[in-house]
Image 1 (cartoon, rainbow, N blue to C red):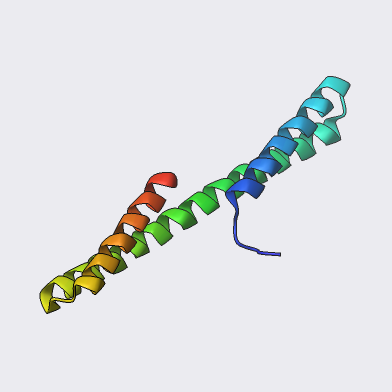
Image 2 (image 1 turned 90 degrees about the vertical axis):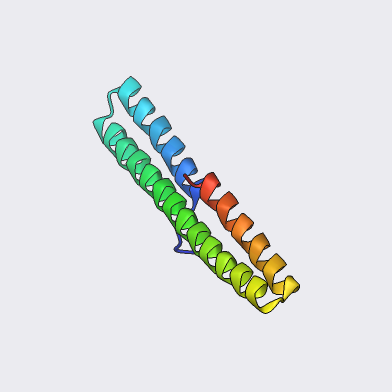
Length: 99
């Protein structure tokens, strides 16, 4: 099992926490309400951590891609230049998904 934050896991915990909190509110079970609030908050935090991690990875890919693209252009290595352009675009897309 991965210890890395996950958007999917974060959303599941957030939703589960909301459901538990609602049940607690409707039944007057304050312990359910409190545990639901805590699970919802933990889920939201995990989602945001995964989002930040994805954005940082996208930034790294863009930088690495730009470097490869420039080196390829300077040395005349079209394959390296194309590979760098692809990696840079992948990084830009990952940043857009996580912003």
